[in-house]
Image 1 (spheres, each protein chain N blue to C red):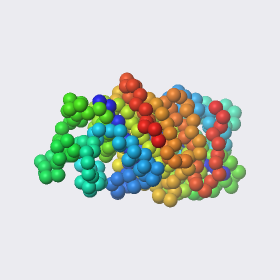
Image 2: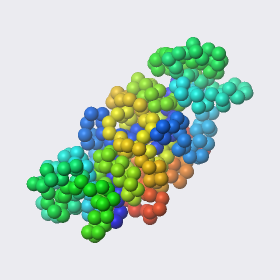
Image 3: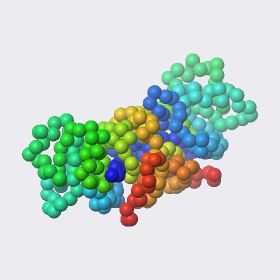
Image 4: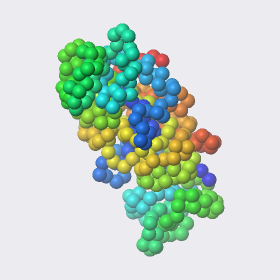
Length: 187
Length: 187
């Protein structure tokens, strides 16, 4: 199973504006790219705060979509909105989550943040690729892409592809040095 | 006068490793680019901590080079190493520094950091262009590119050019939306 970190970041590595939740600075082109890119994934992992920003959208979905795994310290409090195979809540560590998804046959897992989740999976060496949108803005505050120090050996990547989503919006595809490339889906 | 912010950053917008000073993660290709690029500038502005990392190199120089303006809260304590026109120490605000350099006829000013200096000039709307090297590493700690919130209206840029310095090292040229482009020097 491939784990791909998807994020939209400012030029200075922030994934939210100061005092906000969610990437309010993301361009329409990034939002369109992100929705399209997600279709290629059969599961997605995110923190509870990130899930909060898409909860209503997920609840309104009809038909089968990808599994969403939501990391929370208190999975039991979310029992009422859990739908096994569609929305699951867990307090497991990143390594156990990835092992569990792999054992269930999932093939491509999107890691959707926030900064603490990104950091935990990066630090554990579990991120195979990063599809990073870089918007042309310097914020100087807000949630960092990696919210906490990352083990240096797990923080090194190889640039595989780059693409312009808009005249000033870059999409960068990095992979772990020891992993095969995973090409970006066609626009 | 053009003010160009030059920096090498991690993928997550850090300009130093955690607990370090100076960009220890910069590739040899970035270091070569940076030295070559500086030759096009007739002055450079930096904080005292950044000056500390090049002090011996500056002292050993023979012949006329660019003016270095070093920002410090206590310029008087550096009187012994000041050399008017070559190394000057100041406690002035960014706007006064830029106005003073412009009045003296300087044409191209390199802004060399660190994160608080970058932030102060960005926040004041004084950065005309950014030549940003992005190394393929996630750090999760260390000094941020902009060490403090930047006024949103002054944080927006336009991507003008991109270049690969090495297979995984990007060089990005951004400009302020209301400023003409300043092309990167030829490799």
